[in-house]
Image (cartoon, rainbow, N blue to C red):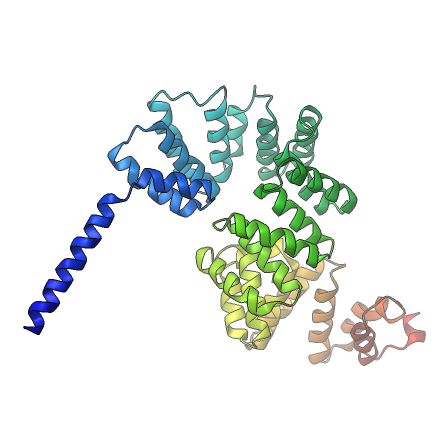
Length: 377
């Protein structure tokens, strides 16, 4: 009798679930998810709706834009091909611009530039700048952005991209100006919010950055960039407990993203889990030259887990590439001192002994190496 009731209850639940599934409209769900910037759900629901209506231009475009938002260039190109086969007119040059962005996402800037060759829209200038940037032609990328801004000075995405480029060049005032323009043009736009937050992070104003990035994460919950930048800002403001679940989520989604791996490794280092630090950064070892912070943290982890020779080799490479990066200088000097090479340590630390702006630990390390103020001068 009990088994009969259980089977009846199970069947009832299954029938209810089937009815609920049948009444769900995936096309409507896809539109609602896209409107809320929930691109994971939008991508999934649009795919479900397209199974019943494979040539629906609205759904194809929605899934294409969702793929781009999620960084899936291959998927976006597949949707673009289906849109073209359906003879869909999205407006002059629009499909080519979407294709171009998809090519950039998949690392083919040449194909993108071919598609954009005769396009003078603001978005084309932005995409050409992105393509040249991916190809390493930074001056050409800057020229494209400036040309686009001359034609469309209030374009939010061009201003956002230019703000980030200026921040990387150390032009804080210019970066803030263009980030402000991006926000003024589109207060709820992801590009402007991210640019404003990242610019403030680069300038050391983690409080202002957190405000912008919290809003970006709220409005664009599926944006990996917003998630990572917000976690960085929380970490900089000491809100480790709030940052921890965001970092874990980001790392689970993209374990080979260098910025995310560094965030997770820093958490592990704070917890004293040096084996986890090493394992986390080992997955991005081939990209360590892009981040002195990650390289030196990995060197620390190697040293803490019994691989001192490899740690010193990595520290030496990092110091050679980034001679003004103080943590590399400090760590390499500490390794020299631990191994009894006082002269090598002294050579690294001597410039800091008489530098009034040097961190106290550097002057202390210099004295440990046998230097005096007179010798340092």
